[in-house]
Length: 76
Image (cartoon, rainbow, N blue to C red; front, side):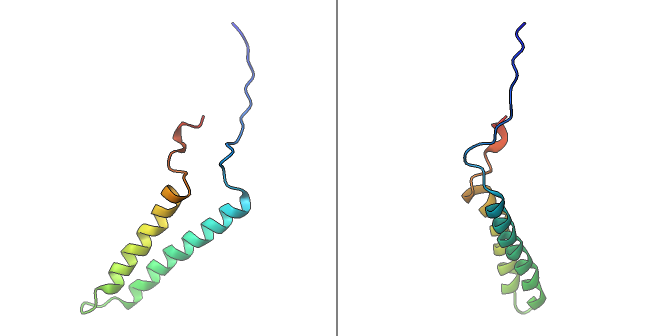
């Protein structure tokens, strides 16, 4: 039996605190803009719902694909 000590290191491609806060703020702006667009929704005008779905999808798609953190499950 060998006793090896391992230390947890952060990956080199991990975002800094400042960029993480900026990304979070931008995605929350997209999310709240999607919710705000629903205030213009009427039965005769379906476009606010289309805008809501688009902004809502972007608020979840951008962090998972463009920032590259969707494949971080095997980093242990």
